[in-house]
Image (cartoon, rainbow, N blue to C red):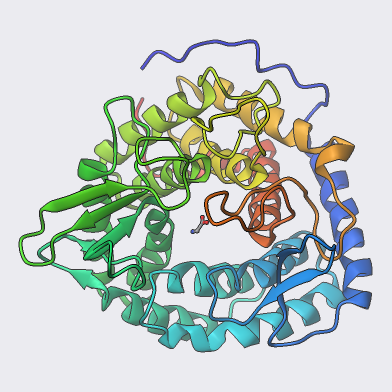
Amino acid sequence: MAYCQQDKTQTSLSIDATYLNQRLDYLTQKMEKYLEELPVDSLKIPRSIDIDGSLIATKSRQWTSGFFPGTLWQLASHSKSQAIISNATAWSQFVEKEKWDTHTHDVGFKVNSAFGKWNTVQKRQKNDEIIIQASQTLIRRYQDTVGAIRSWDFGKERWQFPVIIDNMMNLEMLFDATDLTGDSIYYHIARQHAVTTLNNHFRPDHSSYHVIDYDTLTGEIRNKHTHQGTHHESAWSRGQAWGLYGFAMAYDRTGDERFLAKAKAIANYIFTHPRLPADMIPYWDYDAPNIPNEPRDVSAAVVAANGLMKLAKHDHTHQTQMIEWVDKIIASLDAEEYQTDKIPYLLDHSTGSVPGNFEVDKPLAYADYYYIEALLQRLEWTKGNHAKSNHSDD
Ligand code: GLY
């Protein structure tokens, strides 16, 4: 694969271990202050900010509920802050019951973001049990005829069996469940879901559709749609990022070369896109009609940065280029305009759904979660820990 070189690689900051440690220290202290003012409430898990500046909070049932506790666990893994650990514990416990939710694929996002990250700070048998139960719940949504896990139950008037590119992210928990139990059923379902997505979700230029709808009787494709993009044939930015992260992760867990090739191709699509701004924070859709007068989506940038970090471990030929792209994103987000003081968020300018007209150009809990994950992954890279990769293409 030939990676285009563009003048989008210059960073004004030196992203080294000192910078990353200082940044994580600063963000930890900022979060500690926020927590002093944030009541712990099972019905008010932080998600975004409303037009009037008030907190948009959720019950555990929504797909974002694991991200705020997961952000706290990640900051705790860096700082060992007791204030953050006790808050992370309390907020995570509200999410536990989602291990029973059979109505959405998002059980992976919800449970793994909280309890998977809890395990990185304090290994607990109970966390493993929750992850295993959530995985048992998730695989009930797998259908053999389609070879995929059903994403949503809503929209029955439009779709029979919708599978969205985002669903690649829920596979990580299934790979963990096989590691934890020795039962390969989770692995096989996750791998088959990734193969089906690989075969059906992508256009020749490696951009991804958002929603593929399957016929439940034949497994044939009925429609290729979008739900959060500008139109069915557009490239919704966060969807491209979910695909990059998802296939890089799936390669990491399976060694399947097809997944590596797809992750590389998606990275190339995103980071050489002519409408990717110079600071590498994309507009909410690469085909949004009024670029450059369109909202950005910081969450897409940080999800993609994590995908690049996973991919760089395996793609030695292009790893310098990939780390430069990650560093550009990290440096861009250091700018005052992207930081926020709105409790309890770290970053501004993410976009939930333009077609749904919600959370447009706002702080989002999942942007913060993947931002901290990117900083931590980049810090590990400075320590040479990427050398532990199991698979490599060269
Ligand atoms: N998984 C939902 C979203 O990315 O908005």
